[in-house]
Image (cartoon, rainbow, N blue to C red; front, side):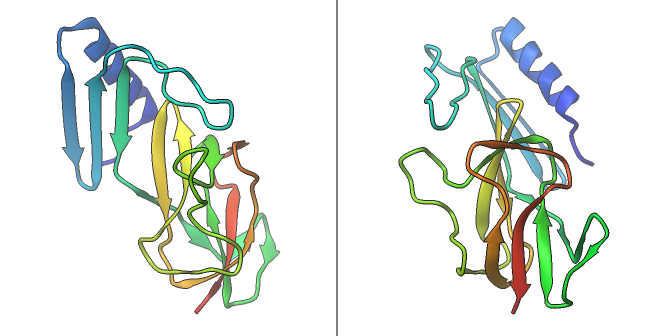
Length: 156
């Protein structure tokens, strides 16, 4: 069972309206934690930080790997890792941190590739294959669409 963004938004609103300070929900691979924090955090110019009192953390999301992008055929040994959601693409966990991956780097299944922020959710996107990053197809802090190619990977 997957949780829809509207359902998460409703949970945030519920927590904000009540005296609850922490709410946890776990369903088949998805974990949502909503915590009321102290003062509102300021946003960084390079990477937004949640500005509401509620913070949400979700378990890593495995992005779909596909061998074709919008009808274009790729060689059999290459796949694209596509965005599983609409949001903002970040290459690193914070503005001052190193990027999760670089072009030419070998990645393993389960390895973090990037973060996509969607509705104040920071979703870690993981690789579901072993391969070499041939191309990072999105610039840091740029909006992405559902199904948009993020990485071109050569399967190893």
